[in-house]
Length: 62
Image 1: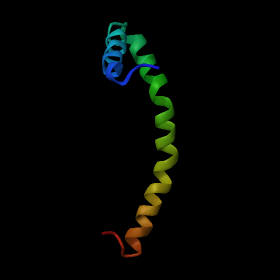
Image 2 (image 1 turned 30 degrees about the horizontal axis):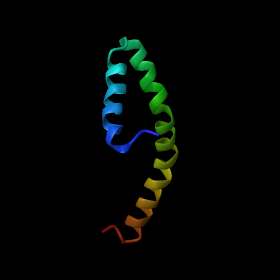
Image 3 (image 1 turned 30 degrees about the vertical axis):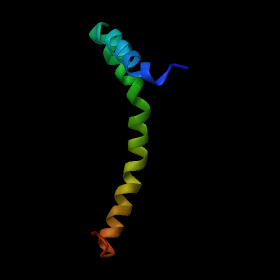
């Protein structure tokens, strides 16, 4: 495990390595890293908006 005081330096090392790659590689890396997040947002956004709307309609919107 990496010591906490070296974590930020290691993250910057990874960022520099990724930034040095060709644009197409960066595009595919971004897709790989964000696909799960996009799926989670898509799954959770609908029910969240529905609950928020129900709260507003019930008169408790703030």
